[in-house]
Amino acid sequence: MKKAVVVFSGGVDSVCAVSFLKSQYELYGITFSYGQKANTEIAAARSFAKKLGLKQHKIVDIGFMKDLYDDSNVLTSTKGNIPSKFEYSIVVPIRNAVFLSISSAWAFTLNASLVVYGAHTGDKHYPDCRPAFAKKLEGALNQGEIDGINSKLRKSIKIWSPYREGLSKSDLLKSGMKILGDSIFKTWSCYSNKKYHCGICESCNNRKTAFQKAGITDKTKYLK
Image (cartoon, rainbow, N blue to C red; front, side, top):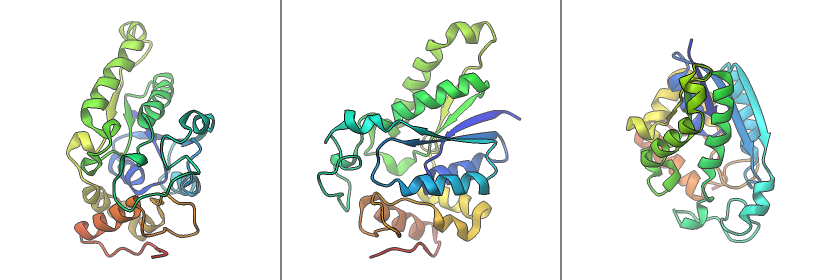
């Protein structure tokens, strides 16, 4: 079976992306600890890696990025409030480029043909979620290994996302429910680091809306 490396946050998007691809690929998950406030998602990633039977799951500490990011965004900074709807303060500078570059290094090592992240059509506000970005990064990474690819020592990679397939968050939820059932409600989307989802941040609101659009009763525990 072909191999794929998945940026696996423990959030509903990456978990459902794995569910979507599970029958087609041998899956390797990589979770990043980058200084995010919502480090609860790492525990969720561990749990779902086992539940979904990932071939391997690595948790990679790149916490030094928090110092580099300084106060550029509210997800890693101790300053600023997390908004309830999209504001550019939520955007962590080229976060996906960092994640996908590291994931691609592992993919080239494994001779995997696919590198996956959970960006979907609702992520249009985030430049590093758009298909145009994914295509250009894919080209650059393959160019960086072109001699290995041409000599058959490496496989070329494709960066895959639900966005590139035209899939929405609610599409992902419908797919994920078929595999995961009610355990899908234990994925972690919240930008805060509380016992339960806060229910008021932008990510929680997007989660609520997606379940509603998918026609799925949302059993996630929210504080509000």
